[in-house]
Each structure stands twice: as structure tokens, then as C-alpha cells.
Amino acid sequence: MQFRVRHLTHYSYARAVNLAPHIIRLHPRADANVLVQAYTCDIDPVPRVCSYCLDDAGNVVLRVEFDTPTLQLQIDSCFVADTRSNVHDLQPVAAGLPAHYSRKEAESLKAYCEQPVLDAVAGNLLDELTLASHGQPLLFLDALNTYIYRHIKREIRDLGAPQTPAQTLTRRCGACRDLAVLFIAVCRAQGFAARFVSGYQAKAEVDHGQRYMHAWPEVYVPGVGWRGYDPTHASLVDDAHVAVAAAFSPAGAAPVEGSYYGEAVRSELSFRLSIEVE
Image (cartoon, rainbow, N blue to C red; front, side, top):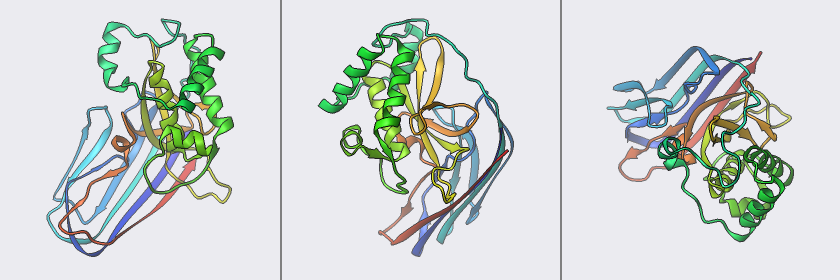
């Protein structure tokens, strides 16, 4: 499948500001299943420093620094990427729950295994899915994916931090980032390493065709590796997704990270996103 994506992000300020260094996470992630044919990122104002690198999670990020006051910051990211299907019927090397990793895997995955304190509602869900899956890791993950899809209504919420797992389960409604955060919390409580992923999907979420960035969780299945799940669609992540960043928490996968110096100034954020898929 081929993705052609243009993502235009625009910040406007009521008066000129001095921009602090920014991190831009819009380049497709270095991934064995994604081949990037072309990528450009035009920034206005033109940065004094512009450098691509890999961050601590292996994401391709663009670090920029500015030296002139400005009334706006515009980021125009475009890429063409080919994806291929890579879903295999692999089985974990260790059955049983909680998830169990080898010593080597456990050491490298430690940061993604931090177990949250679940409230009663989320704790009951964990117990219910554990019982239904008979202690089988893949059955547990599939059951969690299906449960969220069937019981949590999807909504579009452009701005704001993700809801807590308790809020999502209580409201029975959430955006894709809320579903991902819920999935991750339940997985970590069961001993799995899990992380938050941001990116793009082939399917439009709304009938009128407006496109948005997408979010989903990845879980490290013992002996199999990172496997993406999409509770928005009750599916495995495959060639219909292009990831741009993965991180322990949603903040670490934000498409744009940065601020400005000085006193608070009224600002506005707008975006345009075009996704064409062949």
C-alpha cells in the first residue's frame, strides 16, 4: 500500500515571540515494514539549526532552533511511503499470565513495564479478560482489543491530554489516544511492556473525509517482539498504518514539541491533513 501524506501545522501568535528549540516527530518511523520514498519538511521561519536524528526510542526526529522573533510557526511535512503486510501467526515463547520475559528482554524493556495502579473498574476488566483468555498472552491481547472496540464509543477530540483509563471506562467514550492509553495501562498491569504510537491510517474516521492523526498501542509479545493493536478498529496494525513515533507516554510521541520564551501570548493552532492511499 502506498501513502501520500501532507500534514500542515500552523501556530499563530498575537505578537512576535522568540521560539525555543522544537522537536518535530512527523517523519515515518524507521520500520522494516515501511519504505519511505520521499520526505520533505518546510518550516517558516527558517530555522537557524535543522538536524535529523534518532531519539532514545529509535524515532526519526527533526530538531530545530530559531534566532529571529516571529508571529507564526508553520510546519509543512510531506512524504510518500510504501507499506507491506507483516502479520504472522507467531506464538509467544512463554505462555501464561502475567507476561514473562527473558532476563535480556526484561532489562531492555524495563521502562515500558512500569505497572500502573488500576481503579476498581479497570481492575475488574483485567480480571475478566485474564479469566476469559485462559492465561494465553495472545488471547488476552485480542480480547482486550475487541473489548475496547465493542464497549467504548469512538469520538474525535482535536486537542487536550488523553483521558485516564478510569475516565474512558466510566464515560464509555474516547478518542483514539484515550483507547490507546487504556489498552497500555491494562497491558502493563498484566506484566506486558507496552508503548504509545502516533501516526497515520488509511481509513478515514468520519464520513465527511476530514483526516486526523491516529494513535494506537504496541505491546512487546515475549519472543515475538513489538506488535501493534488498533482498538479503534479491533484489528492488528499492518500495512494500513504508518507510525511516526513510539514512546512510553503520549507526550513522547507528540508530533510537535516546543515552546517560546517570555510572557504568555495568545496563540492559535490549526492544521490541514491530506492522506491519499493507493
